[in-house]
Image 1 (cartoon, one colour):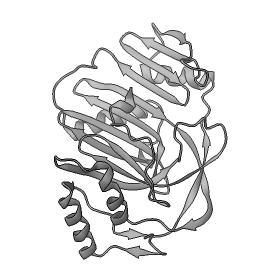
Image 2 (cartoon, rainbow, N blue to C red; image 1 turned 45 degrees about the vertical axis):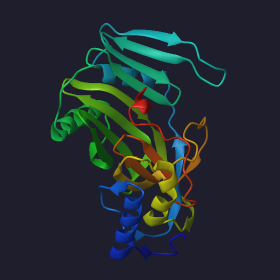
Image 3 (tube, helix red, strand yellow; image 1 turned 60 degrees about the vertical axis):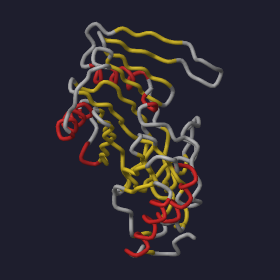
Length: 274
């Protein structure tokens, strides 16, 4: 059942959803969205990183160019591109196709806890160094035991774009790992289409995430995403509405809001930084 036009989940319906999930050992620790309306797709364009942008980003991320070395690693397959690797002391930036990967080997195994406010300050300063406009981005904080992950998403009129982000792993000593992906955001395109409400999304997701032990859903939100995020992305594409569901274990699920179908790519948040 898609929501037809503007649709609001009643409190009784939300309680029914939670009860059904509980019967399958699934618990929702966040508010379930109540209001739904038809949504258009969003036109996005590839973000081209040429040599000048690459040099600038590497210098910004690594904090300078003194002692900077550059190497090229051959592609692993015919479909891959060569990796360009910039190193400055313990810090490494790798340009790998449409992704930029950062790793600080000096603090990668740093232990200890850090509170969310302090980690958000670290993350905000780190991406400001790359001239991101933090005020116009959606911030998401995910905590797993002593590990904190912060993701900044680009937005279109307040709605996050899941395939345009800066994702960071925060330690008490700073940013240990990060991944950057970016698209250029255009305008809405095509007709408004009805979307599935959260109750139908959860009912469909039960068979995928249900386990013998308790499963906790830590976040659910709707945003724009590409149907095939691992494609080549050489031309303009339509980003369509997707639900993002994050489990306490760190697994992230993307569900097409038009079709209620699960997107194939559902890596744990840490695996996606590798």
